[in-house]
Length: 89
Image (cartoon, rainbow, N blue to C red; front, side, top):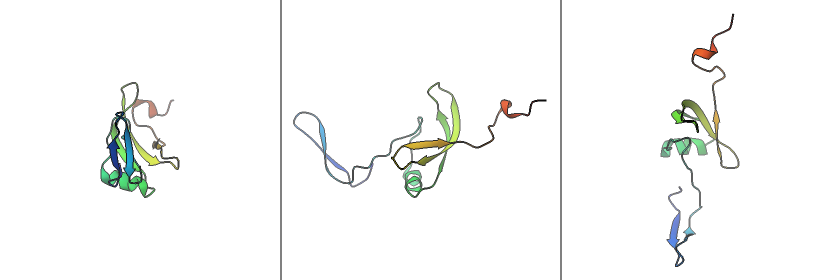
């Protein structure tokens, strides 16, 4: 989250933002992003992540980028690694 964000708890128990830009960047596939990674994403760069977890619980490596709508998008190498990438004969 942006360091300028300030929130205040309301009487009804909800929270209201009272200052700051409101920007928040969440983790991706079970990985928390460092300040350095967040800065790189905001600069338009792709950030490599290792050990991400899929919904099925499998781990994978990828690069992520920040889309214009604020979502994180994974990108993968064109050649998958592992036993299934060998040419069939």
